[in-house]
Image (cartoon, rainbow, N blue to C red; front, side, top):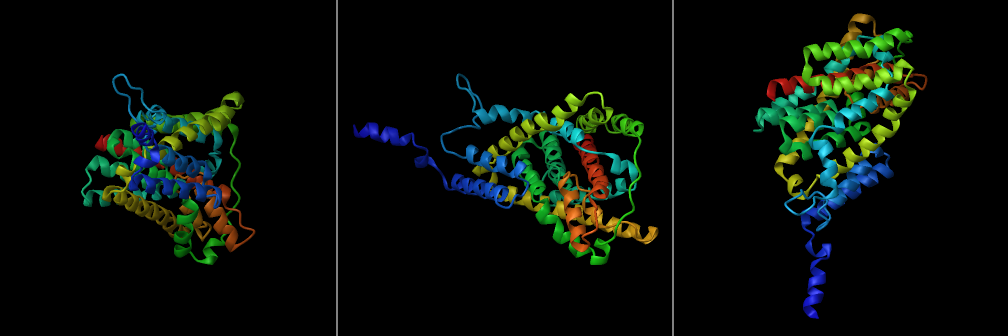
Length: 376
């Protein structure tokens, strides 16, 4: 009888929980708290946090790989969408169907702001090399600076699959924390007068131009950097569905049902991959630090380029839109809008900020393609 009791107790998870697993459960709870109470990008943080809980429950084995005669865990099968780089392009398809590219077309200069805001990718690449990471690993870590979780996941699957879990968690966490990280940097680098600049109204974009834009960009990127086509091509397809006006059902499905389902699976499995043995390491802390530095540099570079441009155009650009050059869309554009309204309640920067924001999405995907072609 006593042996049977011990046998039953041996199957209780609490008996087998480790300190590391307990720590990851706590982190998952904190992320859920931030998502619900503070509303820090709940679409990402809530499923990531719950995924961390699922992935670290002892004996649940939800991330267990299949073996001979043994099925794998549920999260392992869903994770194949991450491991095989399927989910990130589908996310880009949905983003394209949700996003208005006209602010970028109306103000082509914002392409440069989007490009400048990728600077952190390359500074953190150098930092990762200095810390002893291999060139492919450094490239995968650096892409966190674009503040684009799907792009970071996509590139890591090819360059550094062994770091996919830590990089994915870091990238998606920083995407979710855009409203926390960017404002202090933007305020530090700008004056209230600069943040109060009201930009001229954008020109309307004809429908023909809206339709041609995604087609032309896809062809140009495909001819120059073919490795970026899976991301850029799906982004532009989503936008073409939206702008064509003849496939509303497909556009709405991509912008709603598809991206919502894929976001759940991607965020949930990214969280579930956060096992204690992977994350309580110096390597993971290094990735977190490099990712944060990359994000900060990218934000600062976009703001500073906008300030420099103001020296030549009579101060018509609000530097805050430079911070939106990172590809966290539309979170970064919302931050620019919020800071602009703080300085002047009549200042409406959202559409202006969407220009560099969209450019940042394209820029991070192109940067990933370049890194893949050079290091893959």
